[in-house]
Length: 141
Image (cartoon, rainbow, N blue to C red; front, side):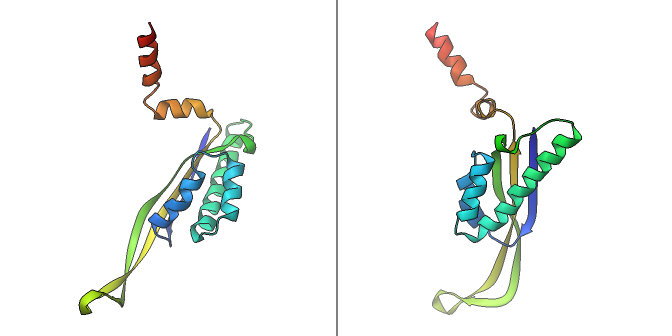
């Protein structure tokens, strides 16, 4: 069972959020949660909230479908940060050779997808649907 959570227009640049999301991608829910709690980045707190929301969505979806989902079996299947809107301020920043840059404030959209399905099946699909294994078995014959 998959569950997703999104946070849109979060006030952090997507590049900074991706640094933290790379730490938790593919980990079990409990490990990802602990890493986010002790990571000393501003994005960690924002991503922690999205991860908790994805867990709650998984529990709610399982309850609606009368399926038992154990939180310890959930793992972070996908997580990514997309670029959101950019707010251009009237303030100016100094630039080289007497020029000036406009101040920009970046926003991003954070998405976390958790799953209780087996990891091996998902990774086989992601790596080309097991084509490597089929090619290896053909060579062996």
